Structure formats: structure tokens, C-alpha cells
Length: 464
Image 1 (cartoon, rainbow, N blue to C red):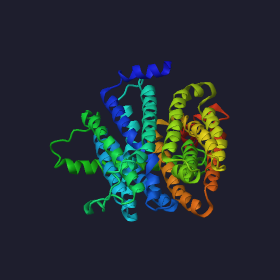
Image 2 (image 1 turned 180 degrees about the horizontal axis):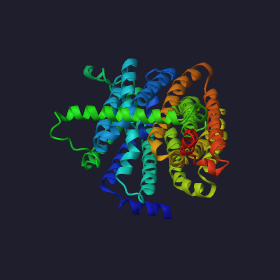
Image 3 (image 1 turned 30 degrees about the vertical axis):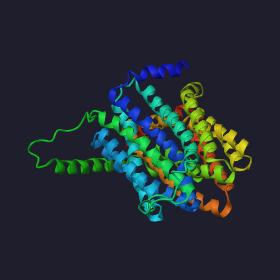
Image 4 (image 1 turned 180 degrees about the vertical axis):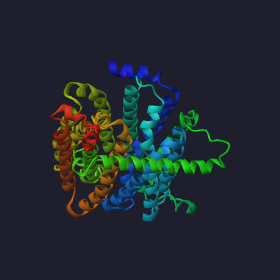
């Protein structure tokens, strides 16, 4: 309770842009929760199977993966306000397409566009919060942002689980459609109830744009274009190319310094491998968890919304406790312990058909796996030199996104061919490998936990 009061008091001390960002995230978090619960179920109601859902997830993740590095360049060149506004517009337009367009090609195109917008939101988050906060505020600000997102997502999941049931009970909304509406809304009551619920979620997200427009321009280091230059467009193009060349140069410097024999033992490679293994495991089963509960375990969408919302609420609470656990056990040991504890629960959920047991264990599996993700992010930045942290963060994000894309599409095929148990077993194996990789390289010796490439540079340099 003391920590919660401290977070609330800190909110009033945050800079204006940071407070507006948190308010916008809270409003859009409700919509995100509704989509997480209902969208896959909506596709199933249209007649699409897990295989197509996997393909759509693959396309969305590929769009995000391809846009990650360009998004990083844009974050360095443009204001966070502009990126947040335009990426939100892109996601909103793609979301409307995913709800109203029911043909496979249209769904895939809108998913790809949504992935691009999500990449920009993902990349701009940490730099924007860092730019709009003082060093002493950042631990509270980053933690508050995570918890606020989790809490509003819980609310969205609970609302989303009950919305289709309530909409189907309204005879006016389920009445036969006029001809001009049949191209947009489904005729059958079940898919139409999901459509209307998702459209309502989009309306809820509308006010989240207001705080974005109220933000001030945060380009603190923007260069003023000299009068002698012919046009701002030409200067932006040239400076953009220079930024890209500088990024390529930093990658080349890194690869030159870290020779092949030391590359595979470097923190960037090992932590990227950890992220890739987590992405491989998560992609196998997480996109299909709602289908598993509703179709296989016979839970209602409303019940799954409550279960999933409860798990997210527990995740928010345990996320507040994770820093204190890291102080007692060390960052790596606390991450490994909590993630390892979640794996037996994952296997039990996927290998039994008893809904009450699966529901009870689900409430704790996600919190145990995710509670230390913030600690892992901090450690992943501390484990590399400052001059390579941008490259490292891009590598971590790309590793996770590409791995997720590969197994998200594979998971749907596995379900069709072999059923649900293999995706949970495969996810558990990947998680075990991630924990072993992390703890085996960083957990046993605290001195090795914060490796830097300076030692490698010294070893690579010729003797004086």
C-alpha cells in the first residue's frame, strides 16, 4: 500500500508531457484489453481456423519487425508527439480494416499496416519517457507506466468478455441489416456481436488522441536549418541518410571489435538469444490461449475475460514487487526464479481438460513469467556499454519480434494437425532454454553479470 501511495504522489510531480502520455495510454489500454480478448474469437466466428490466425499474426509481426529499425531512426529525427499521433492514426485505420473487412487478403494487409504502427509505438516509448523526465523520476515513471497499462488492460478484458453477450441480447442490434450495411457487418448474430464490440472498443480509444495533441514539442536537440540550405526537405533527407550511415558505422565498429570467437559470448548476442527464445515460446501458445479456453475448455468469452483480466491484475501487483525481489536475490537470479516457477503451471494448463484447474493456474502463470520483465529490460541495458545500447535494444526487439512471428504462424498449423498440447510443451521448452541461457551466463557470477565490450576492445587492440 505504501508503494501505491508513493506512485500516486509521484504522478503529480511528473512533467506535463509524461502525465499526458500516461493518460493517453490509460485510455487506449482499455481498447487493447478488449481486442486481446475478442479479436481471435471474432475471426473464429467468421469461419477462420487457427492456421489463418497464425498467418495473420505472422504478417502483423513481420510488419512490426521490418519497421523497428526505421522507427528508431525516426525517433531520433522527429518529435515523440508527432510519432505518437501518426502511429496511433495508422493503428486506428488498420484496426477499422481488421473489423470491417472480412476477406483474407484485406485482413492480412490491415494486419501488416497495424504491425508497422505498433513498431513505432514500441520504439518511441522508452526514449519519449526518458526525454520527458528527470533521472530521479524515471524509476517511478517507468514502473507506473507498466502498471497503469496492465490495470487498464484488465478493465478492457473484463468489459470485452461481457460485451458480445450483452450485444447479442439486444434484438435491435441483431435485426436483419439493410442492403447498404451487409458489406460491412456480418449477418450472423455471433460474428456481428464481436464486430460491434470491437467497434465500440475503437470508440473508447478515440479520447486517447486528446492528450497527444495537448503535448508540447519534445525535440530538445532539433537542429535549426540554416537559411542557406535550399529546403528543409533536402536537409531532412540528407540528415536522415547521415543518421542511417552513422547507425551502420556503429554496427560495423561493433562487429570489427567483437571478433567471431567473442561475438557468441558477448552480452548483446546472449541477451538477444534470450529474447529470441522467449519470443519463440510465447508465439507458440499465447495467440491461441483465448481460443483454447473458449473452444477446448468450453469457457464463455465473458469468463475468459475475467480470468485473463485477473491474471493481468496479478501481474501488475507483482511487477511492483519485482524490484524488491531483485534487490534481495540479484536481477538475474530473480528473473530466472520467477520465470522457471511459471513453467510447471504452463504445462499443467496445456495438458489437462479441467477448466477450473486451468483457470486457477492461469491466474498465476502469467504473473510469474512477466513480473520481472522490467528488471530484465534494466539488466539488458546495464549489461552493455553505453555506446552500444541503441544497437542492443534494436537487437533485442528484433530478436523477439522475428521469433514470435515464426512460431505464431507455426502454432496454428500445429493445433490443426496435432491439437493443443504440443504448443504448450514447445513453449515450455523454449522458456526453459531461455532461463538456462540467462542464468548460465549471468547468474552464477555477479561480476560477469555486467560484462562490457571495453574488455574485448582492449584484448583486440595491438600491444603498445
